[in-house]
Every structure is written in C-alpha cells, then in structure tokens.
Length: 88
Length: 144
Image (cartoon, rainbow over all chains, first blue to last red; front, side):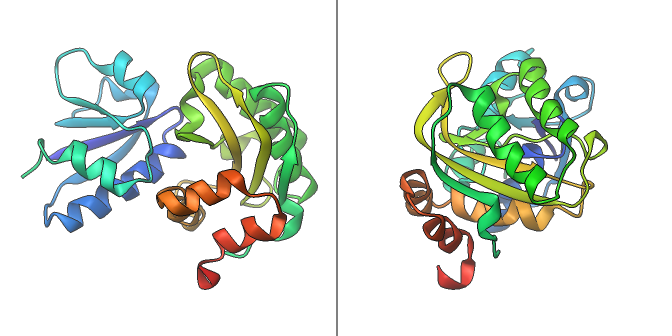
C-alpha cells in the first residue's frame, strides 16, 4: 500500500504528516509506503491513499482514490481515527 | 529542543496573517537563519498556495524552500496576542517559522514541533503562553 502525504511544497507539513502517519501505522502494526509530495505533482503520482489538509483534499479528490483531510497533522489520535478504515 | 529566547516572541499584535508571517520571519533573519528574501518567499507561498500552512487548529508553519535564502536551519515561534485570520475560515495565533536546509536535515525540527502541537495539553498551553520562558519549556522535552 502506498500513502501520499501532500502539502504545498512537499517538505514542510507533508513531512510532519508523514511522521504522524508512520507513527500510527506502527501503533496499528501495519506496513505501508509513505511518501511526501507537493500539491502540484500529487495528482499525477501513483498512490492508494492521499492524506493532506482540508483545502488540498477538496482539490485532489477526483474520485480516483480516497483522500483524507486532516485538521491537526501532528495529532496521531485524529490521524489514526481517520486512517483506520482504509488500512489493514 | 532548546530554543534560545531570541527566536521567541509572545504577545505581539499583527494586523493580519501577512504581518504575522513577517514577524516570525524577522526573528529568523535576526537569528541568522535566513536572508531577507526568504521572508518574502514565505509570504508569496501563502498567496500562491493558500492557507495550507495552518497545520493544526490555531497554528501556522510559514516556510519557503531552502534555495529561497536559508543560511542555517532553525525555527522561530511567535505567539500573538490575538489570532489573525487567513482568507477563509482559518485562523492562527501561533506562528512557527521554519527554515529548512534540505528535506532530511530538518526532521528533528519538525519532530520537536510535532511533539508540542500533537499534544492537546501542550498545544493549549502554547496558544495561551504569555512569557518566552513558557514557550521554551514547552519545546524543551526534558522539562516537559
């Protein structure tokens, strides 16, 4: 499974989100590839799931893959609750 | 992570998000982390990409690219007196300026920030911080 963490430039908040997602995967005993991407290239990259903020989620949700919007990208509890239906 | 007091401000007033971003950018300039053009790039990024720098309720992480004028990586923290709003429904009272030199080297900075804003008690405390010392203590893991 490949999860794409997306932010504006691909190395600030997406990096932080990637860390939170990896933490949650570990807690859930799940394995997945988590990569970061900037908003402009995210839509063209292969992924099973996209995690990002509310604004980008709206724009990236073209129906081709699930897109999850996160309010607090460092909050592992929120990320866990939103991810849980998609993994495992 | 130990933050020196030069990169922290509390209780400043800002007329809007742009001034708030410039204030936390100014701290990075004064601390020798970035050139002045980096702060312009921080502002431009919000104009181009929107309020995505609001990474948690009430918290913004303004930053630009390493090639926009980063001299030495680091962060600055500004806790405003009142929240400022971004274009739509988003607002922030905490502005954390990030100067990253490359994709990998700044991970410990992001981790230190995540440890504070991912913890609801610490985050609530940070938003209400009224002294530089309080902010330092929140980021200094050893003192909790």
